[in-house]
Length: 580
Image (cartoon, rainbow, N blue to C red; front, top):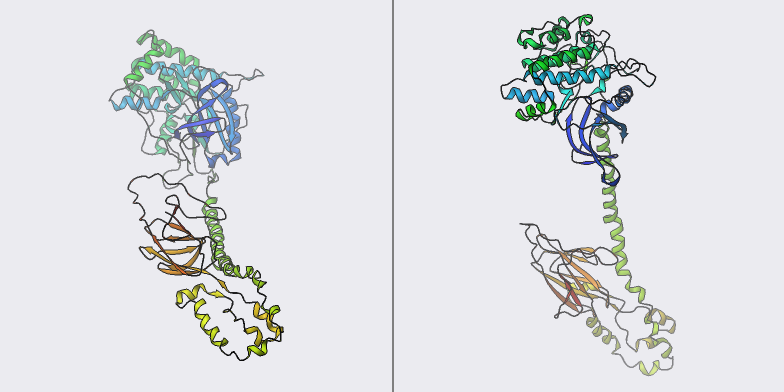
């Protein structure tokens, strides 16, 4: 797929930001009246997920749910639609980076996120989660929204110190019947709650456990649950055994209440966790403002990350019982036989060769028909055209003028037959090249011939008319150029004699030779004498640097070769015009 800027419905995609397991993320622009422009984020569902109707239904239900969330700490969703069968979501663009990139930038300098910054970020996230958990519908009934994927990747930090939660795409409302496959886990492994990995019912407290894990990682620079295998991570999450001694003392009570494995002993709400964080922040850094977070971001620039190219795949029994990409939100465990992802481009694997074979056979058939059938027929019609004008000479009236009485006095004259033999060499060419031009009809008949033949044979004697054809001795410098006459190949190379040229009609003689520019001359024969055309060829320029192409010339009635210079009259040969 082309990643260059291009239109996409009413949006214009500017740059690809990332490619995850379910969607591609683009920075885009939308336009309005009077030059209105707005930068947004387009999240396009990948083709193999877009072809799954259950997944698309889930995405649409939950995108409609996300539109209802309007809070400063939640990324706003503007639009949901489809362009060329590609389902997308348009969201608010946050100019900055995610929390994971910031932590990577801090770790790259051998430092840790300062406690005040960690407390402020966690407090803002808790405020946004509290709003989502308590959101009610138009009927006044709580929607029961649970994010289920609170992780550093989904916490965005703007350059002005704003904190926003994104990717409510896998959130679920208890009033919605969204697609949930048996045995499917949603959320990233290192930030899951015990009830998530145990496939137990989820509550808003699930998000608080994940937020506690994010806070622990910011304060210590380490993940709370980390192991060599995914199975090891799952086992640690089930028991929720975390060493809080590495965290600052002011935060240990907050971490202990948010990271309880028993849901009943956990924080009752995100608001309660937010209030405890606010008290700690006021104690360690009174008056902390968003601008202080912006200053910290500038001091530790987020580590730039390349465009992600992770694709969600099916379960692999060779790696572990659970297979999940680090950047995807859906994982698989044994017992869930999900259909394999559909590949949208697989049809081209066999369709493209068939199309190439089909169009290739048409091209070959057309070429054979042109060279073997059409061209020979056209060439056969060219010499047959001169006899069509032969009926004009019937004005020779020797038959009516020759009466029967005069023959007796003329009989003594015996020399007429030799006269016919002497006139024949004068009209027929003596050289083989001249014979190619040919002379249609018979030699001139003497005036005495009608006296020796009956009157009834006179019409047959007058029918043959001598039709002379022009000829040209084509010579090129250097030799070996292919000769074309009137855009038809002659299968001859220079030097050669070209015949069968109709008198008093212009003929295009074209020469083509590898390494030389094509040359075309217009020659109009006025008699049957052999005329030499000496046509010098000009070497083709070497393409050492770009040259401005000369305009093509196309004459009426068919294609013509390239003309090198405007036509000039050749003073040596009458009726010849040469194009270089």
